[in-house]
Length: 636
Image (cartoon, rainbow, N blue to C red):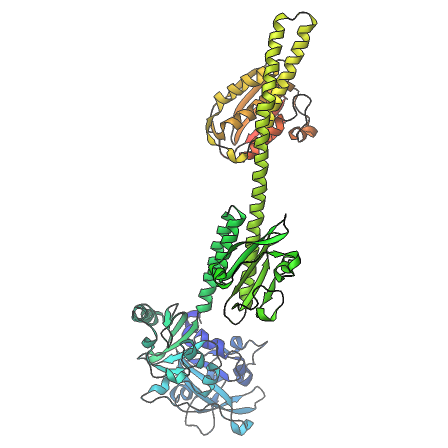
């Protein structure tokens, strides 16, 4: 039998409710075939001709078998077969007999109710066999044919213990049976308050119209409908619900409803915390993080009394940095906590363990003692400080509320870690900028003077003095290169200004600088192809100057250098002696050089990394060195 037909025989909600019940329940379709049986039914009739359920799987062994293979009319009944007895006498108790494989016959009392596609049969051993009370008694309805929609006593005992709200409505939409949970969902004290009323009285006009046009149409077409409408409680308060409707023969309905208020509120809380986390990570200062934390505690967690106290290392104190309006209205002042005050806030900060107080007046060392505060939670923020939060009135902190507050505190701590790291990085960059200014002014000015003086001295120098001046010129050139390298290393990567840069002209400009600096007058350069790359032009020129300078410095007199495009970037190759495989990783280490400043290839790697590129070294086609720069996009 298909799942769809299964659902038309017994609603999923009712099926779940009777699985573990002590009543024996069978659902028999119009053809006399068992479509559902709970475990008690399997125990009671399952041994009749064919064996009982195995391993508790009642539905597998009973469902699908003809009911007359399991049961028969009891002696003295005027029915020819069990099918007609079950289907035609649903208004009266029925007497049945089950025959075990041993041949022993057991008399059973049964009662039936109409269900989609057949009847539900409730069974128990008869009083003559067990001495127990009968469970097949009818519960009278309100008259006028309403009995058809009222469950018998066995079903009612199942439904009245259910946590879900379950009701049965007649074809006119009036409640004929309501379990206690259903009445409670809508704010009514007793199921009798709803019996006889129309379901439309529990919804506003717009929702009634939607249910009539959507749910009722689906019921007629498919036999069932599920959705999440908004109901109204007895006092008029709207509430979100999960509603499932199943069609009964003759037009009645089985209605299962659950209150979704907590689910909706929980989702809203999580969404608010998620939004707060984004704001926390976007904050650029400790004060901004604290402000977001206070707002999130009040708005997302409904904890209006919130403040953040951050640690001042110099004073060794927890200073209030941000607090809610409710804190300002409740307290005369917002305190600073120190090691010597014996406060619970300082103890939580030192231990790193949260502290929870559901009744502050019964706790020691709380600032909120003697105030209207109904509960207080102290949450450490790592080595940054504490988050104090609470409420004015309430029944104490719910466990879920504490968990969510700790989640918020963890996010605040992560944000403060990030801000602290960013502040340290900014301070480092400021130091580098000051260092760069010193290099540019305090070193370059004397160097320029020394180079000019050397030029003047060369005009009158003779003999060995000229050689000394040549050596001095080389030293000046190396000093100028060293200053340029250090300046390049000190630049903030955040200052990158990427623009489409034409690689060919830039390479040729870098070549003139590199060849002049190294005195490689016999070296040659070939640029294979041309294209643009998105890069900071100044940084890229420095990268290329250092690669070309490295080639001319180590390639020998007359070295030939090729710069070309690759599928994923560009390369610089030469026909010099190359770099041994065991030294290829070392050449990028700062200070590693046979000549020059020892910073050139380190700068190449740094420029590549700040652009998000990678650089590697290998062997060229001519046996020399080849440096490949893989960019984040194809060179076009």
